[in-house]
Image 1 (tube, rainbow, N blue to C red):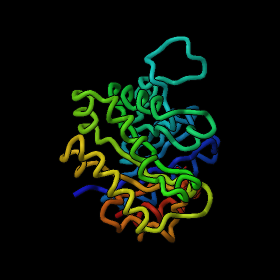
Image 2 (image 1 turned 180 degrees about the vertical axis):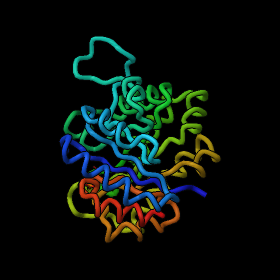
Image 3 (image 1 turned 135 degrees about the horizontal axis):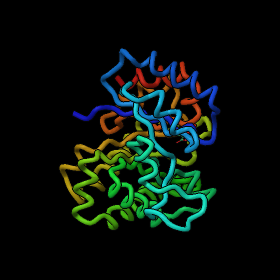
Length: 255
Ligand code: PEP
C-alpha cells in the first residue's frame, strides 16, 4: 500500500512574514492528519526559515530545482549538498516552468536526478506534455522520452538507491499547470498507469512501490476524485499551496 504524498510548490512567491503565517497554519491544520506525507518546496532563500519552523513537525521541505555538480564556478547554482545541509529531503526536477522558461532538457533533468540520488535527496521528477503534444496524441511519446532519459542515466546502484529514497514521479500536463484546467481523474489515471508500466520495464517491484502524483490546477474541490484513482498517489500543488486553508483541504483529501 502506497502512502499518499502532497507536495506544495510555492514557485517564486512568499516573504518572511507571509511564510511564517502559512507554515504555522499548516503545522496546526495538519497535526491530526498523519496518514499521508506532506512536503513544501520553497524558494531557496527561505529554506532556513522553513527548516526552523517545520523541524520535528512531520512536514518535510525541499528545493524547487538543483544543479547536477557538487561545487564549482557555477554562479547562481545550488548543489544537492547545499539543499541537504538545509535539511531538505526532497527536490523538484524537470518542472515544466524550468523546461519551458529556462530551457532545461530531459538530459539535464536526468543528470540532476542522478546527482540528487547520490546526495540522499528524494527527487520528484515532473513529466508531462504540452497542449499541442496532447492534441497531437503524443502524450505517451513525450512522457516516455522524459522517463526514459532518467532510466537510462541511472546505473543499477543508483537505481537501487533511488528506490530506497522513494523517488517520486509527478505527472503534470503542461496545459493544466497554472491554467485552471485540470486533467480528468480518468485522463490522469491513464497516464499514471503508463508511467508505472514504464518503470516496470526497469524493475517491477519499484514500479509497484513508486509514488506517482498528479499536478495541474489541483484544488480542494477536485483533489479527492483525483486521489481516488488507483495509480494517483497524491498531488503536486502550485497556486493552491499558497493558500493555507485550500492546501490543508487538499492534504486532508489525501488521507
Ligand atoms: C505546479 O507548479 O507544479 C503546479 C501544478 O501548479 P498549479 O497547481 O498552479 O497548476
